[in-house]
Image (tube, rainbow, N blue to C red; front, side, top):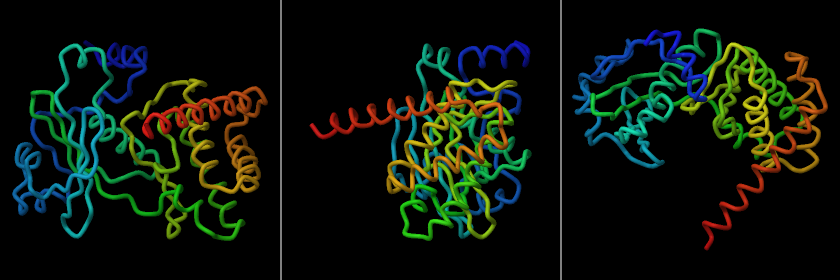
Amino acid sequence: MSLHVLEVLTRFLGGSLYPAMPLRKGLEVANGWVSLFDSAGILGFDALWDSGRLNRFGEKPGRDISTMELGGKTLFVKRYYKKSLLSSILSRLEGSVVEWVGAHVLKDLGFKSFEPVAIGFDGSGRSILVIAKIEGERLEDFFKRDVPFEYKVNVTERLADFAARFHACGFTHQDFYLCHLFWNKETGEIGVIDLQRLRRTGHLILPWVIKDLAQIGYSSKNVLKIEEWAELSDIFWDTYTSVLPKFKDGRIVEKIQKKIARIERHDIKLKKGSAR
């Protein structure tokens, strides 16, 4: 199957759009990390997968997440498990591939994300991704803090500019909550992590953009005072639409608000279910 046909097919299926980077069986380690992996005895897929260095702290359907200390840095290790044949055929590209390639593409375009350290496949359907901890503070934590309102305005404007440029390049994140967005006060940069649902299209798909913006709106609503949220939402939208003026449309704002309400209802339903 040609690359062009594969890309069109993944777009049609709503998949992530990075099939172009060649990846081979085994473990591929980024330059600058090979000697550290070798010294630690984890320069191989099985050695890393089964390493006692992994401190597992999270699990999601189809994958688990660990931390690993190496070279004085905290690394995150995501292990993706083998899928059934039917699931492999019908599902999108594996999150490990999307995150690895997506991080490289974002970096090439000047966007801040995590440093991709290693990726591996064993041929059975398992894959593993290693990334370095991103510098900065989660925006979810920043906006919770008692800091001058002018400071929150400044960070909101930077976030809006980042989101607009990100979307203008054809990207949508699909998990664009403040817990996945970081503020580095030293560099003044906004960064983004958790790229496993990242998509890129030649033209913006409005429902995907609306979902991203609603996720930012909902997560900020949960950590800001109501009067702060109202004012900062207006500031965000003014900055965002100054970069993407074609979105300066009341109907789009209304759709974002409706999506925020749907996310809120869904979240309440999940919380009620888990409390039983």
